[in-house]
Length: 341
Image 1 (cartoon, rainbow, N blue to C red):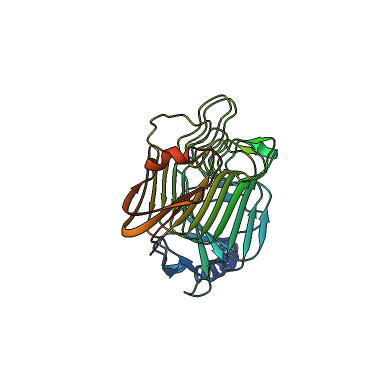
Image 2: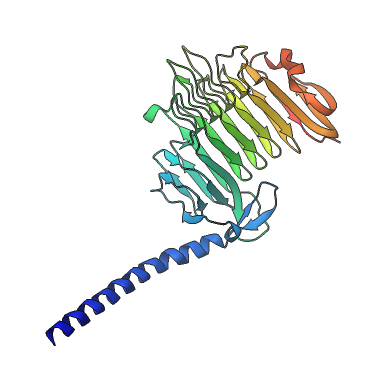
């Protein structure tokens, strides 16, 4: 009898533990179900429900979020401010719901094989794209070397894709900024990091290496350096949206607006820029655009190229390096507007 009572007690205890575990899982499942019911903007500009993504976990972005885990969708459901720098894993998706604001006050690290897709989202298939991400760096935590989104000091950027939303990035470090806005980390004493792979298909993207100080990083692309070489621009593809990229917004910039980090040198490091589809691009720096290959293609539709108030209308593929004599003139904006009828 005593033995049977012990067995009964153990069985009952295990049942209670199992029940408690199941109860603990219920809120997490309910949260995942709620988050996966939202819609997001895909790379092709169409909306789809997050629940259609296979193999992803779901999480809400909170002020305590400092790690973006692998294969996880993070949804900004309310205004949130994060003080620490966020470290990104692989296959991360960040969804900016309409009207919600995320402030990453020390930026987001995306390095090596890690990757993030930033996009807009909403409660229905009609997505307005009014969600906002602000990512900045400051003097603290190597802010002059860290990219706002991308590599830390001297490190190459991983893969950054932006499909929607409003994204603004810059550093407010002083007196000089070496990290890119989006791309490679800067390095005062060594070479800047590469811009990695950066793809923009939609949304409004504003990227400065520095906002109010001298900038050596690219707005989008490589990190800058003081004593070494600026980082390669990487592989940059812009197929849609409105993109503004300055090495420095309000002071002299010594990196490219889009492309390599400063100081700019005429070297063959394989970096590329392609502007395709419908896109409006403005770039400014010591060279507005500086890559080994820089092309815009609108097939048979006109492509407007503008520099310092002078415009050209080109059809088909436009080799932007044909305008390099203008591009490398410092500190004047260079525009490319696609599909101008």
